[in-house]
Amino acid sequence: MTTASLELGPRRKRQATLLYHFASLDYLKGLLTRVEDLILYADALVSGRAHLDKYLLSERWGARDTSANWSTYGFPSLIAFRDSVVSDIHARSRDVYGITGAHQCARMLAEYSLMWMTPEQEAQFKERFELAYRYASRIDEMVGRNSNLGDHYFWLIWNEHKHEFPRLPRFRIRTDIEGESGQVPPRTGVYIPQDSVWGTPQFAWAGGDPSEHGSRYYGGRLKDEEIFNELGMEAMAKVGQSHLWPWDDGAGAVEFLRAKGIRDSDGEYAVDERRAISMLWAVSYERGVYDPGLIGVNMTTRPCKWYYVERLEGEYEDANEPETALAPSRGPGMYAKTAEPCPYPGVWECVEQPVGHQTIAFGVPMPNVDAQAVTWRLVKTV
Image (cartoon, rainbow, N blue to C red; front, side, top):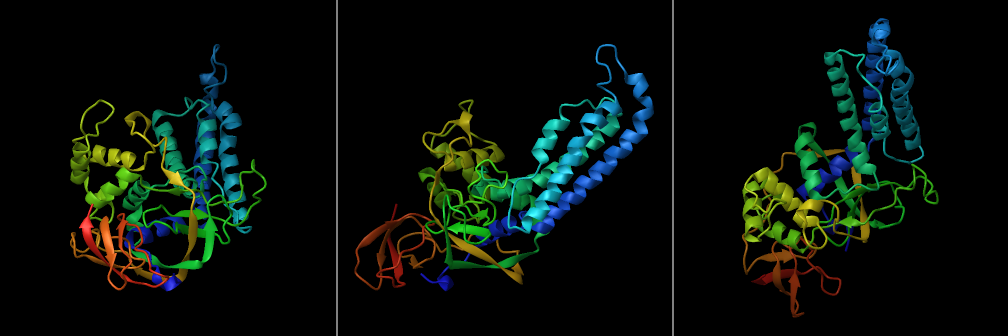
């Protein structure tokens, strides 16, 4: 299969855009600006409230609720957060990526009282920190080695940030640059699974020391592929058949779950569309028997080989592609060519060569015959 025979569909273009955007150096520098602004705001609050500390001293709690106590023990966590971002920025020159210090900072700040602030100041400080934390979390999710980034996650993030992308970067799949799960990739960037159009892309990097298992910058090895389970593939065919993402169809999710007899943790069928979409995500990815009390615990994954997705610098295309998938009408008589995603699960026959019938799942690339591109015809649906 040649590089030219593979292209990213609209869904994967959006996923690759999000991965490259949130893992970029410019986005990381934006975090530094936000943390520095938070530090200046906190410093101004401390300066403006320090004269009230003598009234906040307590026989039982001592200076715990004073600005001096927070300045001594809480404020340094903001400084450490900023220093970690500066360190991350320098590490990018060595092609090294890692999660931010946001979570550690949040845990440290939670240990110290904000009673020295007015209720309004406390609310404003928490709101400002939450904005910086959410900004940082996008980096952590994209480069974290323990993150589960399934299709539903990318759908959520795209709908939150799509206004930022009136144009999408152009991409090229490099079949000459391959990676493997568990291994450091040959080049830093986005990778897609070779074996499935439904496997979730990921960001991996070539820098760092892969021998240092305890290092924060442990080499950016390719993770296992996040994939739909058997029920998920059926949902893609039924709920997602008229949408770019199945998660766009809340009514379809309600209907699918009821038809499958899937209930929530209270033993009830989902009637709220948002709740149904969340449940559809869980049943589409869970490994083994679906347990509504253990959503996201046992994700379906598998090791695989990966292709590098190259971003073509300075080249863009319109992001306003139709939200519905461009799929032909369903049923026997449909045609698909080698390397195209299978448009409908069923039994297919090769038009050019008598190689017998093949059962192909929805979304799986149509096969070649003797290394030659061919045309397939659907003879029976499943």
